[in-house]
Image (tube, one colour):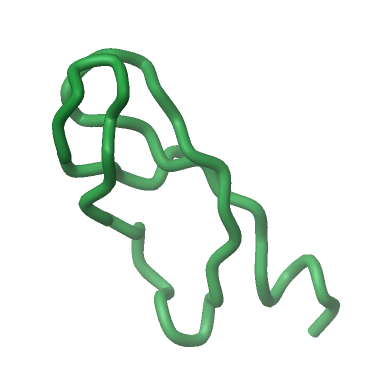
Length: 54
């Protein structure tokens, strides 16, 4: 597999509806499904769930 196929760049979008996003990479072998992480949203100043946006 090529480098871009194994670790693609993804956007993590806030589920709070603020439109805030994080940009990161993920490993498709370890996480083949959509990624969900709890991260800080500076717009509402809370930790909320961020989901992978394709």
